[in-house]
Image 1 (tube, rainbow, N blue to C red):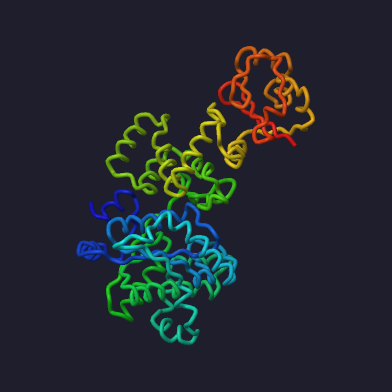
Image 2 (image 1 turned 90 degrees about the horizontal axis):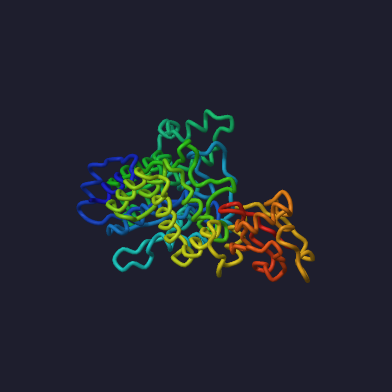
Length: 425
């Protein structure tokens, strides 16, 4: 299977400027390709994964991958898919963001491969030295205003209440200049991007044809969405980040393991490097028994391991099992806090646990797990109450500071899945 056939099978192909010619070129040998991102924050999020993973797929197939950080374009803002203009960042903010993101990219791309190492470039390096007049004369003259106005990203903004500024209107010229520069200096023949980037990408292929009279191609992939058409990668708490300080490996794993059934197989194809045979076998199991959630678990394991490494995956798996009755064990306090964020929490004064402590029935009533101490005693003696996931059978059991997890938590469970966390101050 060729790289293009694999992309098509995985649902990662939307359009190409000339599919037949690109297929022939790829059959002749390795190409250099690039994909850009504007470093609007100091972390990538899961919405950035697909283009970087496509670069990795090309790299594994022997091609030369370039990921471009938009130190220049990030100062302007891409109007594609945006209903309003972005806030402009300072050069210092952009430089900080690029440095932080490079560490994340190292997990997705191999920058030290012997034959075809990936490259990270910053378009500020070649854009900043060019004067405004030189840019208008050497680049702007090759663009028809009629064609620029016809771009979908421009038309949609012009018909909106917010309109579009000249700054954002000029974005496609800057992106075209990037492709032209990389074609001239790095023999880069292919640019990839989401389907919303089609206008910006074709602006680059046109510029290369006019100024260099050389071939260049654009390849787009469908934008990843949820079943309701909403944007992928967002939760009630905001974006799902690749930086573990912003989205912990446990929450990252939970995001993927909780993928809606209708999208699980699609995401497995798009976000993992598992071979076709294995994915199709998992798809058959999923169709036969969706409740087993084999696809969801495989998806979450593969992506978490790719982004955060095997150790973080192991910690996320252990934490995930806590709410299914597993022992708390040696997980970190940070991971434990991620777990308890998912269940109700009740505050408790530390004094109530000091000395002789408080009775377990009293604590169950305080936690809202029993309506009365009498019922709480029956639940305990019936074997349905767990303290820090360990079953307690004596209703006379006192709970003291010795039972605290990380010196401040008690995890109470009634039955199989009803939890409350006591947070002690």
